[in-house]
Image (cartoon, rainbow, N blue to C red; front, top):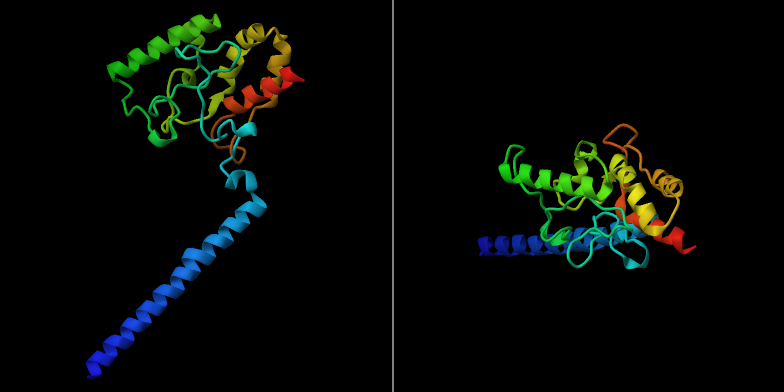
Length: 200
C-alpha cells in the first residue's frame, strides 16, 4: 500500500515537472528568444532575405542561363558542390582530397574556362573561382575574383569600368572582428546593387 502511494506520488511529481518544464523551456523560452530576435535583429532572424525575396544573403546563387553558361552581365559566384548547385537541402563539399585526379581535372577545367571568359592568363584566376566551399553554399567571393570580372560585366552592361570597380569596392566586407578571415564580397548582393544602380 505504501509502495503504491509512493509510486503514484513520484509519478505525479514527474508528470507535473515534465509539464512545467515543457511550458517554460518549450514554449516560454521559444517565445522570448523569438521575440528578442524579432526586436533586435529582425533581418537576421527572418533568414537574411534579399530584397524582393530573391534568396538569402547567407546562401550563394548561380548566375547562369538554362544551359549553365555564365550570364556575362553578372558577377559569378564560386563553384558549388551542393546538389545541383547552391541547394540548401544538400549542403556539402565534394569531399575530394587535394591530390584527387577528378578534383584536379575539375579545377583545371574551371581555370581554363574562367581565364578564357575573363580574358586573363590561367595563373591570374583566384583559387575561390575554381574551388567550392566546404558547405557548397558560400555566398562570398574574394575581392580579387570580383575585380577580375569587372571588365566583362562593364562591357556586357555598357557601363564605365571605373564605375563598376567603384561599386565593387563599396561592397567589400572586412575581416570578421577585424582580423579573422579575408576581405570578401557577397556576389548576390553585389549583383542586386548593380541592377539597382543601372535601373536608377
